[in-house]
Length: 151
Ligand code: SF4
Ligand code: SF4
Ligand SMILES: [Zn+2]
Image (cartoon, rainbow, N blue to C red; front, side):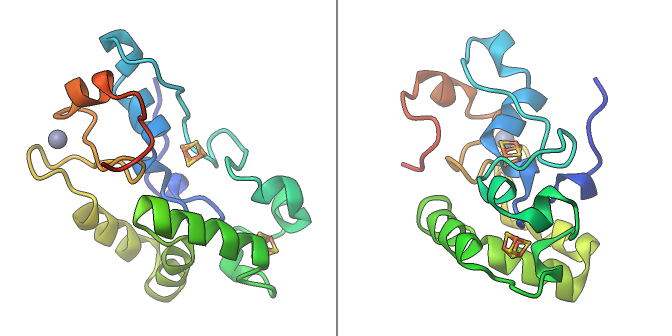
């Protein structure tokens, strides 16, 4: 299977799909290893936005902006609400991601993400949705009822 490039994995709302549990589940083919999880190849590659932002925003749905930071209303109320959820549940800020991408450029942002979300055992990326590595922590993921939360 052809995987998207790293740059394609930064969504318009600032999500880094490469640390999403559903992306990592797909990348590591966990369904073949006894883990029942949805697969997703990323927001841009599937030409959708996983959050409700795209459904409710005509700029995103009509591709008028590539990233929310290009929008004159940035950060809008919906983005702020989504950001609050991500900050409290998933230890990351979409708005901060967007500001970093805008100020430093996407390459710099991707580098900082690689160190922030690095698995201490194997060096691959862990998921922001549960803090787990889909290689080293596979057994724990398999046994967990709630796969989308930190413990
Ligand atoms: S579910 Fe959403 S955050 Fe996860 S990979 Fe798909 S588009 Fe990205
Ligand atoms: S910041 Fe702008 S482009 Fe992004 S969701 Fe809000 S209104 Fe839409
Ligand atoms: Zn690991």
